Length: 550
Image 1 (cartoon, one colour):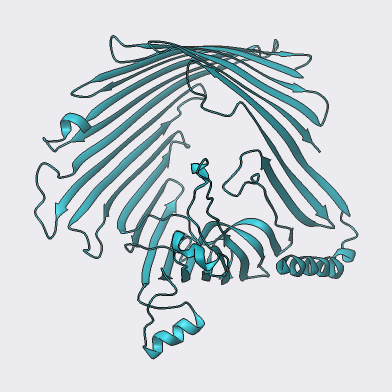
Image 2 (image 1 turned 180 degrees about the vertical axis):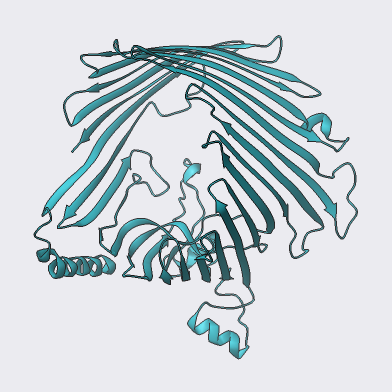
């Protein structure tokens, strides 16, 4: 492809211009790792949940040439996709000083509301000379999918989709801690990527143009401001009926095709962070995303939502006491297109208490309240959504560290409640969950021996039913040959289900890690799971992994 040759030419040019001037640097170095994993599985008494055999090959390589860093990674497996080929993705992002290039499959983030975490197969660059912040990426945002017509393979009978291509440009000024960036995105489906006769079984070709602003500004030594804004023009069918307005035609010619299927959306968030001292900080944040907001540079985004959140934190007694709390209000139906509006109050608090090096306590509490209100219609009491969801966690821990042995005792208590305040639905939806976990770990350092034991009990209570689960796990690990070989054996006993219909689960497992040589290691894991109930079954699974580090 053309962008490959452009990228390689640019890379060679940069090497020639700067490489020979770096004689004090190490001319060439390479490090990384390669691994190969095989997985086997079998089942008796039930339908197999996985393939009997599979494999994964993966690796990462970091190459340095006269100071230029070129990271490369790949993953190859036997898991076929709809395209009947292994899952192969290759990409690299070489970097030298303020120059960073992209080639192949790259995950790019320019703006949370324009281009955020989308994987693009193409080429690009990011340049940060001084205060200038420039970025550009061009390539394929989506691969075309051809419909499979084989009746005996319904999983491959997918809907056709067009190949999607485009580019994004970022231009800004500042540093990592204080900056202003402008981001532009233009992406469209390639109408020539599918034959005309297949369009009836595909989505209509779409196009999108989006503009965003991202900023962080330091107002003072204690006050910081941050904001992100996005505006998107989205055409759902480029062949829909056109609009004859001259201004619209001007935008259609240079930006994105506008017609009767086009829509525009807005999204923004802004916040203030105030930290007057090392002992206290607070922040205020507001976010609003229009109904239907979407861009082709973001896979998924919650829309039709606005929220305002206040966060506070305190750090006292030489960081032995850390407290965090937040409260916020979230609402939907921003343009009053729905018949009902939902409001959610969200509150949470966190405490971390470590008075000594041996004892610590962590506690969390959160509460979410949902109240649905009618705008254009009166909501019937039988279907009205009015709930409160609360969660609490308490985690004390005690540790003793010595020359010969280390002891760690951990207790965790979790409580979750869903309080449905609708008398017509709380019989089925309201519940209370209590979960207890106690664990003990012993590590004999001189003998290289580790022993662990844990017990877990959970109980779910509803007005119409009750379910419990309890499990006990015992594990022993030992090192051999100066810890070159580490073996671990564990045994799990678990019972679950309602009273009178308990299911017993027994799962022994063994795992190990053997360091063959300085750069070579082998890992393995194998377990046998047996279920004793009305429907008995047994599953056996394991994997072997060879790793080469260099």
